[in-house]
Image (tube, rainbow over all chains, first blue to last red; front, side, top):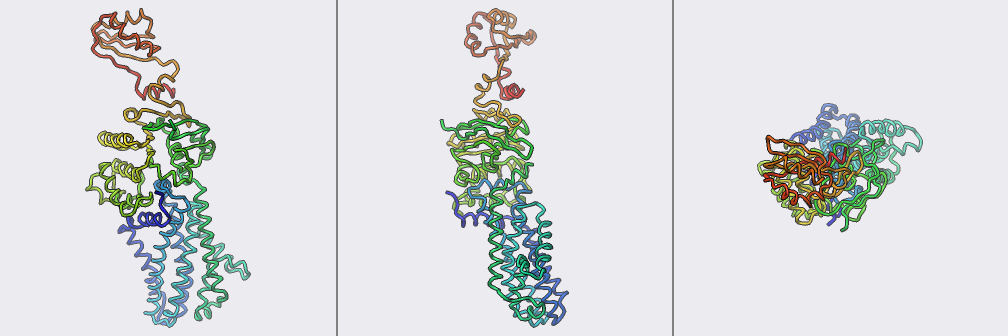
Length: 251
Length: 308
């Protein structure tokens, strides 16, 4: 019997996580989880609203989270190619598109967990540092983290399919589109995902006042983030279906 | 008989490097050996058959279907790759269970199936808790074979499955393959250990520089070789007398007498006709024969002739 999508997902979940939670990998994940709040603890002074907002909206949601998504999702297929283990998956009875999407979902579930835990730890740091806005920003931070994770993971997965230097490609994309185009004061800045994240964050008065970000059209921003995710995944599925990665390895 | 694999004008290119060059062939049911030196195109052909490559040109049908991106067909195929790579952080049972679920087995049966197969490929249970990265080459081969058998495929494609195994291990794997073939599984197996392939398979496909040079049973391959001369070695009490009788009968291409060891080595041009007359010639010569051996009927010698 050919497995349906849920069964494929279950198999991929099994392969992705059940067998690979080694001490080394767990230590890396713990370090990733704890590094940001630990640094934030030293970087945010007592009642330091500005520092807290800068840490959460710029350093965390604008840099650390996208980079984490890029590294994890970029390697989801590429690592299999590099390790010469992709053949075990490609010869299973599921389409390549389903394999790609299934792997994305499995990685995403994990990343969402890490981002959720990280966001909560950051809020806890803010609360312990007596930042008045820490608790009121928590829900928005979690929500934007969840939506941002969707889109940056999808872009990372696509970059990983395009080149084995996906981190470099991701950084180039970040500088050109997110930083460069995102700061052009015309409608073209709608190409920047960061800008839509900022629109969602600007729903909070403290963020809006501090950075003068526009809070207009939060639903449009959310729709664009989700639409870009869908587009990146569709492109990724098409690339993975058409491209011969075994061929690439043989060469 | 319906062929399991049918290729017409099949070519595969890696940029400017040629993997397979316009080959047409059929692979029949049963146990078939893919023979060829490194770079002959064996792995390329295997990866085409298992749908990992899309042919650069030509057509390929496996069990009557196009293998590229075809899950329905992949459900019927088991594949064991050549490389030694396995996910280093996984333990064998969870890894095989995951692949079993991915292959369509009910999740409740996956673990049981994984354990049954690890027992079948004789991976000792004391190694099951180790991670695959800690495994020896031979142990990896066993795990790779187990993953190919997970979903009880009707067609098994194995790329050098005996690499890295000790003689006993090879014997065990050969036994498993013969057992699977006896149960009706069609198997294509590539190897550069020709003696083992010869003991395992009845049909062969000889590849060289991306071309199919010959295919068929060992006898069919032999008869396809132009100017094939059968080489025999007979140990007897009067080798000179036997040589004279054979010479008079006009069947000899050449001979070599080794009187000290009572041995006659000779070559005959037309083996079929020679073997028809052989008993009569022996009777005429009245020599006492201790041993008769054919020196050049092995797959290795046929392969050397075909690729020469």
